[in-house]
Length: 385
Image (cartoon, rainbow, N blue to C red):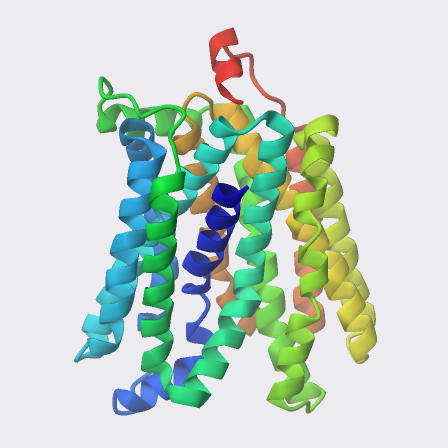
């Protein structure tokens, strides 16, 4: 389906902007007199997480299509403007706003897929979007390295802006809302409903589990780069190849969507978390062996992909008819974890980090599996897709 393919491509493009800063840090810093640009470059992560919270109720109020197209279009403009920032402070502001605008995408897109597609088809499509989120962490860095070496870091943002604008233009005519929003509701009431979701055990408990998903993903890959370069003394080109070698594990998500629909989101999440923990344990045992690291990383990212598919479906279903609010809470928590990951990765060595993440993932498995959906009205259940 063209619509689903464009949504997945847009998910990849939007999320890649959160990770492109990692390999271009030195080049950008040189352009600003050698100043440390890490806070300004990584600021998009915080803006993206905050955008989730705002745009969840907004998309419930104004409709999925309108909010998604507007958010991605504004993100394209801000992405184009980033290289023109004259000071590090302005650069950081533009990155925050860029991430914030991008935060409109996921609550709108995930809610749209849950409403517009049959249940099993929706879980498969959501799985494909989850795969795009994971692949963005690798492909964003690879693209940034290649473009920066060829033409300079500025062209990375200009090319990305063109891609985002084109994607929004292609989506606009093919994306139709199953519901055009609720004109009678107030956005404030959407935030109140979002806050009320936090008082429900079937929402609050799995949120704690969600925090460790992208935390473990980003922390592992951040620490892995240090392990490969500083400990194993591998060249950067080999490090890039090893990163790309984990992509096959990510591709499992679209194919487990129907399975998650059959066994239930709790069981799907449990399997995903445990599989991810096993993958990290394999990496820890074989930290000095490239083949073992590649095998372990594939098991790990496959588990993260399965768990992500199950958890985002879980939050959309449980929050219905406030799907936007539910997926916003999910996304905010996921990227809050991602924002915290570099600090954890730099505080611990490779093996100690993996040990801590294995423990966190096992804890997440217990929380996700033990949570149960509260009783909801029949009409809300029907709305969940």
